[in-house]
Length: 338
Image (tube, rainbow, N blue to C red; front, top):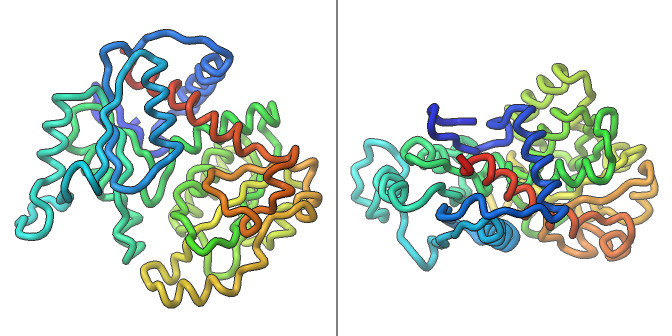
């Protein structure tokens, strides 16, 4: 993981070795079967939200409670003020405090910091650097856990891997279709970036489908091809929706922003208006190999995915969401039990 010898940060799934991923998933499965111990008694995790959350906040709170620890929840919109991330800044703007100082102080209160940073939303070149979460990791003296930045959502990736393993058994050689879906409020591509690389690392062949103009970050795509070459699996990132789903064992639906018009709301709305046929329904799911559906939620019913699929036997959504709890217990145990 990132960090010095005594501080292990979790910014992206790649911060875990293959062996550590397996250890976390094995431990998570044991937790899910009912194994429980208060191994994090007297440990506290500070949860800092600069954006909203439902599943991440709740599952992390419950995870720490079930492991005997505690959480302190802070939300930027109500509990504290703007923080400056840029080093060497003359702080004559809105932010009265620097992340450097906040990280140093909070490190003296808590055992770890879990952070969901705000996005600038105007420039992908700026947001993709994940400067804020990396500033916290640079200055904190306790582990920093990424609860979703612009580029990565490693907590979701862990839950997705556990769900895939429970559903498919041996993952090597299986096919995953990651499909863009229509939404009036597309999300960050962080979830897709994370599950793409996570699946490839575990021997899954991955096909990504999206409308023209919704290509993934070029750096992530390059890394995906590199991982695929190392693992001897296939990756395609320019397929049509039907071609991606055809023969897939799992269809992973998700809407994400166009990086070409990132920060330009007028052009983004115009481009989005031409994509309303990008929905997953039963007819498309039938193209797969007894395909199951995954989606990280929240999901817009009958716009991204039809009710028939969401409420039918193909859907893994609720198990996928539940696995956030178990895999976060596994991760917290790995990071903090010593």
